[in-house]
Length: 453
Image (cartoon, rainbow, N blue to C red; front, side):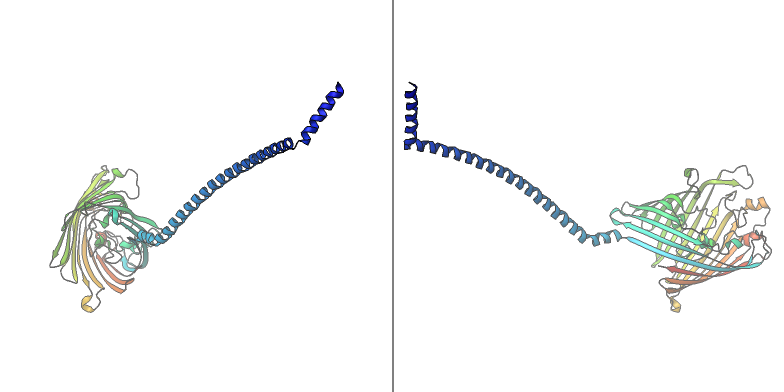
């Protein structure tokens, strides 16, 4: 039986391998299987390629966007470079830079300050200089303006050798350092019908002005002819100024300043207030200005005849006129009055003597050099007096006579950057004839050089 089964199995195997149809069927199935395996492998590779391509496309898009961003930034940078000169010009537009140097040499006879134990009736020659740098910027779009003034210098000139009610060199206010004397911002209002300025201001720029007697660097050197001797202006200090022009021929001005310019604390306890009205004329094309002002100073003052009253205010009024009377001649006059019953203990003459004035006046003229072929030259003359307070006179028992001043200068215009001005001054009744020996008359001769850059 076992032999029969083995023989049958051998027949079947032989029949399978000897039958060509069965052999082909097996071969096809194997090939199909291999093809399927290859297709699956190819599909896997295609899928991997698709994923790689998609990743590459994303990377390309990101890089393309970055390139586009860089191109935009580079284009903007190129445009900015092109605009840079014009933007710089816009920043510079309305910017004004100025610089000046003033040098003064003066000699005086009969100087009357013996506070250092020096003999009377001496002759002295001293000098001083001042330097100014100004920077102004106009903002047309805002109708406003900013201003910076730096000042420095050295030397008192002959002022410390003279005891006077009103000294002889207004430009000698130097402290041997560089300081900010003005720093302010001005805003135009109501289409240039008003203006507001605030910051560190110079009150003399806005009040008691004068066209021919208001600038010690180019006009009169003597203090009496720079501003009224009875007007207690604080030095450059914190404050504000308002101007209103209701008509072309009238200007209303008001200023409020810190009366103690050396101390900015408790400013509202020491206010200096001043108001001014200016009338502008033009007769036959000859311009004129007529200014009237009144002021009040809350800085502590002492009564001459009652020293226990040491917290008094001071007040006063004055005027300043200038009028052209021809194409080459301009006249001016000033007058001032202040409360004669009080004095500022910090206001002393050289030598430390307190004093106060009650009235002062000055007048003069300026002649342009056209008739002698020097159109830019100036010849000027002024005369004035300072009257001491009656209570001051009574307190000390002084004679306290009016101190008189005469000054004349000739401004020689050498070029647009340099001028020389010989200056002569004569003072009689120096300090009311209450210091020094008779005749108490002082002659001062000097030379001023003014350079502008």
